[in-house]
Amino acid sequence: MKLGVMGALFGKMKIDAALDYCQKVGLDAIELPAGAYPGDPWKLIGIHKDKKRLTELKKKIADRGLVVQGIAVHGNPVHPNKKIAREHQAAQRNGVLLAAEFNTVVINFSGCPAGCATDKTPNWVTCPWPNEYSEACDYQWNKVLIPFWSKENNFAKKHGVKIAFEAHPGMTVSNPEAVVRLRKAAGSQLGANLDPSHFFWQGIDPVEAARFLGENKCIFHVHAKDCAIHAWNAGTCGNLDSKSYGDVKNRGWVFRTCGYGHGDEFWKPFVSMLRLHGYDGVLSIEHEDSLMSMSEGFEKAVAYLKGVMLKEKTGQAWWF
Image 1 (cartoon, rainbow, N blue to C red):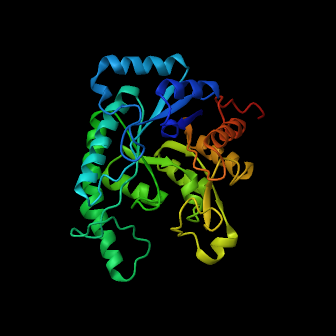
Image 2 (cartoon, rainbow, N blue to C red):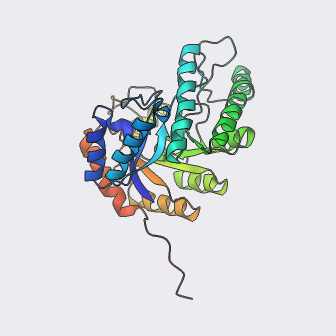
Image 3 (tube, one colour):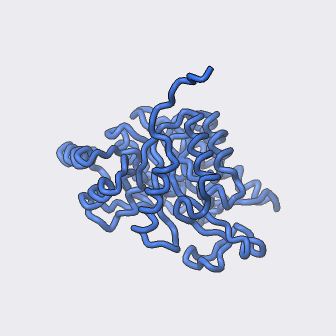
């Protein structure tokens, strides 16, 4: 396994400074932001067409002993606002073309459509009744998501690229079962960016999620981020909590730096399950801990994960 970072974390830095920092803390890889919600801080959109700039970028990364593992274009390409949808669709396509240059994956959300063709805002459905919600699910899956991602699957396949969905609440694909459902319906280039933090508060076991996604051969990328349930709040407000992420004291749950939501009792079985199913890619740190500064939270995650991740190839069973 390799240790990396979601590069959007360093979006306020110049790219050379960001790469220097990655080298300094001992990372192996970086996930490059290239549009939609991660933004385009290093002007990477369209760089695949500029061979000189692309060659310079590859050299900068290689000179620091890093590799690119992931092009981040998290967005909502099926947004009912056509302008937003067009922008995020363009980021997805550009992401595929850039990923092809680095022999890596594109990381995105599935997106969340409206509840019907005339709605104007995305509609994340969390229950089947009243019946309008089931009807909305049918529309979202069969009229929007499957047709859209079938086309994107074919485009990605043409360029030898896989698309890794982060199963994020608020997006229609928000759990491992939905990842596999869309993969089976729209194409085998589609799979998972497994982020355990989003599963904890949904009541999903991330180790079991890794087993399920591994058995379906679709763990394409992994985000390393933790989560803590605040039982004193969750006991009365639940975990479907729309309060600000900054309202840490009153939320039912919060994102945490790796090791501060869960310790070895989770992270060691998690990385072991990834290895059991053949995942040898990156653990890409995504820092969103409201109780720590960016640098402290990120560097604590680096130090912690270095102690639990598995880097060497497995040996033979010599004991029998």
